[in-house]
Image 1 (cartoon, one colour):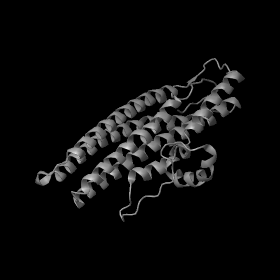
Image 2 (tube, rainbow, N blue to C red; image 1 turned 120 degrees about the vertical axis):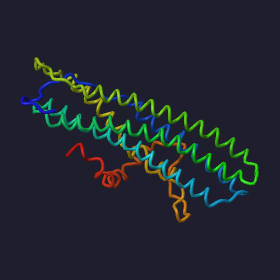
Image 3 (spheres, rainbow, N blue to C red; image 1 turned 45 degrees about the vertical axis):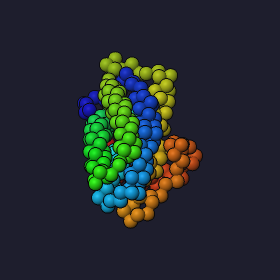
Length: 276
């Protein structure tokens, strides 16, 4: 937003719900990952008597596509983190009596990215749901050649695909709700009477956004570990390295501190556009 007059006071909006960030991550760890493992185990059991390099190629591509989906989900968290940082800069400018137009433009840019990217992620998930269904169908056809019994694989894969589809639907609904919340926080509006918010209002709004900022901090959610688990073995046959505890998807803040600097250096080139 550009304006000839400084942006002085606004009707503050609180951040989007923290539930969105937490629940999306829970679905990724507690639905997507277990179902990918379940399908892999069912496939391994079937391949014990029906070995096929063609099946391995199909499944490797499925896992690669699943890892892409996880990467897209991670980006939403990173964008939320950036938006919260931008809003806090905007809030501080208003509190200190400085022109908040520049920080406000950064905030608007960041939230617009979240709004657009969330829609893209919804499409990626829905497309992957169809891709994995088709892939399992192809694998079943290959396994059932020569009238071999694949009933066990069919049962396991059908149940797993149902669980996976349910997770996709829930995650997509959460992202749609998140888009609505992001659209709402974009409507920070100028107070035409220039009534300065009270210190209590500044304090309350700042604390809410600081909590949202902290909860959006990607290293705390161990997305790279989840990505490695879903991606599976490397092409050379060596297993992907993963040191996380699958029953505890969110690591403690203290244990993640040593990883944060390297993590943000790695991802900074792709997360900084809204601060340019």
